[in-house]
Image (cartoon, rainbow, N blue to C red):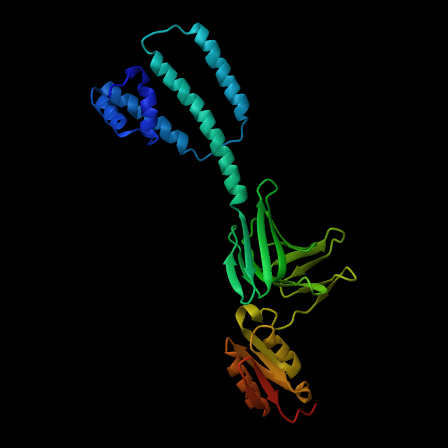
Amino acid sequence: MNYNVDHIDDLIGKYLAGEAAKDEILFIESWVNENETNRKHLDQCKLIFDKTFHARDLQEFDTDAAWLKLRSKLHAGSKTVPFHARKSEQQFWLRIAASVIVVLGIGFFAYQWINSAGKSMEVVAQKETKADTLPDGSGVFLNKKTELAYTYNKKEKNHVVKLKGEAYFNIHHDDEKTFIIDAEGVFIRDIGTSFNVKAYPDDNTVEVVVEEGKVMFYTDTDSGIFLSAKGKGIYNKTTKTFTIEQPEENVLAYKTKFFSFSDTDLRTAVEALNNVYDKKIILGENLYNCRLTVSFNQEDIDEIAAVMAETLGLTLKNSANEIRLEGQGCER
């Protein structure tokens, strides 16, 4: 097939974009091998093509205004620039300039879309706990029956997590960006920290326990409280008030499977275990006030129940879904 050399730049464009047909590729390669001038021309085209499509530092600009400005120059130029032997080369560079504007404009909006749409995430843990990493690098561990939705607003530089349930956050802190947990209108703002949030919709409270660092705990109408490491804050949904308390020893047991009981009544200990394990321990009422000092670290619930029974002299009845502990009771 014969090709007009005046349109060589159109063929080069298709060749570099990978859109040329087999016969067009053969023609370009033959044309390039004719002389060094043709080879240099192809190299210049390739350099501009590569720079255009691999540009990383995209800037915001008005693509319509830029195109109109370029088009007006092209139009004016068509009246004053005389025709000569290098017309096709001039037209090629003008087409390249226009292509740069169009491609960068498309690239910019694609970049914006990727940054806004790519930095969103949903995590759900229903019957089992789940560990994950948010798009900003922060670690999160979800308790059972928990839903989390993460979004990042690039313009406002805000990371926002909507939480229903309980989750532990290890924040990848950035002083130039804010990280906020939204628990149905109750907010926890990170100030460089690791913390646990318990906010089940059916509960009357939202609880925050800070392991490291500090957080702000507040609502739209109440400036709330600051919490530091080892501090616990509670928001009462009915009274709309904040209080500060000492955190329980086993608040993170759902994550770590580590339990520490120090002269703890058996009823409280069993409640803590039943909140983590699917297989439940059932106590006889006369055992509620028995007290226990022991620690467990990732043991199976059957092993834990056996240790409790042996320690307190109780009888144990094990079935598929529950473990019953019975005995004479304990003196106070």
